[in-house]
Length: 228
Image 1: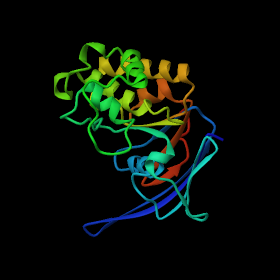
Image 2 (image 1 turned 135 degrees about the vertical axis):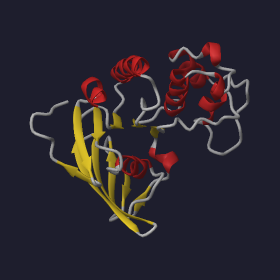
Image 3 (image 1 turned 90 degrees about the horizontal axis):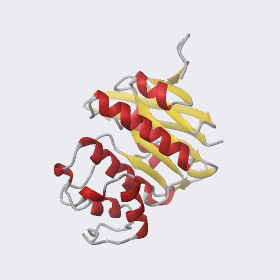
């Protein structure tokens, strides 16, 4: 089993209460968590990555237990070995493309050198054709190049799985279509388990081997007549 997730968390904000109660198990190498805005998709992904802490539950990815409240297992985000791409990419504006990618290799908060020659950094700069902009800052590159930089940073540490939060939301339709195809081809080449969250039907069509529907913080049955 690649994905074995059972997560529970109650969120309170300004008197409002929202409960995430998400459980799913799947052997799909490309799994899509699908639902409208406010369904709890991002919270679920952050809890899987260790960025947010659930009240209880478990996260097992590719046979590794990353979190299990009953067994008192809670690996740090760094030790979970999950590549994570944020919706807004979360690139550091004061670091170059090369430095942003190299940051994924560091255990602390010191900025990488502008002249880093780490083989893994060079590999991913080449894979995503970022050589012409390696010394550029995020505000100097296109949306597609920013996404490729974020993907390279997530992959540079050789993760066991890749988590993506609405990775195409900030892009125009033509660029979305091209980068969807690139991501599908990359995943097929690497054979890396991928979990993507979206509310876009086109993402399902191109990328989903299996779909988990989330609504109101809970997994709901697949609508009749709908398939990936």
